[in-house]
Image 1: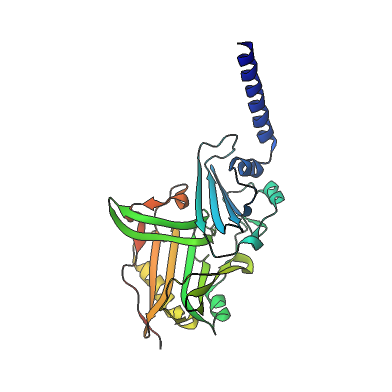
Image 2: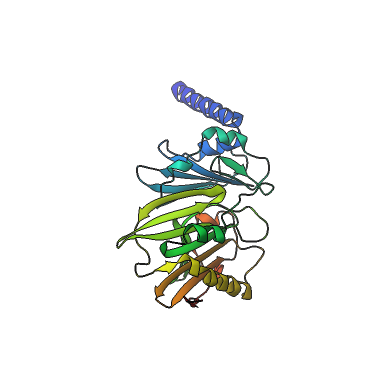
Length: 307
């Protein structure tokens, strides 16, 4: 009996000691430790909002991109933890963060740590413009061009849209990490994903982030028959925005936007639009949502290549 009481006492002492140790750490460091991230995963981004933490990691050996979510504000022990994983052809190792940056978390929320810098609403990230993308790829032949927007949260993978047994497709950046713009209004902070023709069965994927940051990698072809000059995509994207503005989506509060431009026919360019309308904390970690959460353009928007 004494041995059992001593073992229980020792266990409680160790637990209290561990909790005291956690409580002594800076808030972001504490949350990072509670996320239980393996040592072989590189930290590449952090998002922090009230009662919510996200850590994006990349493992160069397995080529897996992950997002860990903790549902707690001042974690001693989190009351919720999610992990989302995708395999990516993109090399995110150049974005690996120094863990010492976790000690510099801003008091303001939401906050984003990306490419070695903390961002807040007062100091938001500056995303590349479409004109900059056009200039860089003006002499390239593309298979696809996609703009991703996230108002809140780090976003990877796809979210399936489903009602009952009926599937309506999905929304999401699949193997690309999308970072939020942190702004209350507007939706101009796009992460640009470019699929450049490399060979018949492979594409060069390049993703453009704030601060002139790029990641790239060679991956599978998604639009095998597609061929598009980026200079011709402007009208198609412009029409997509006009279509969006004619709809009843919450213009001041889109959660996620996805614009995809491609061309499967010689005389047309198509732009597909998906908008996530409703927000709930941790929605980026979801794998499935009712179809009513998403507004989509059910028919492609044709644009004559000569325009």
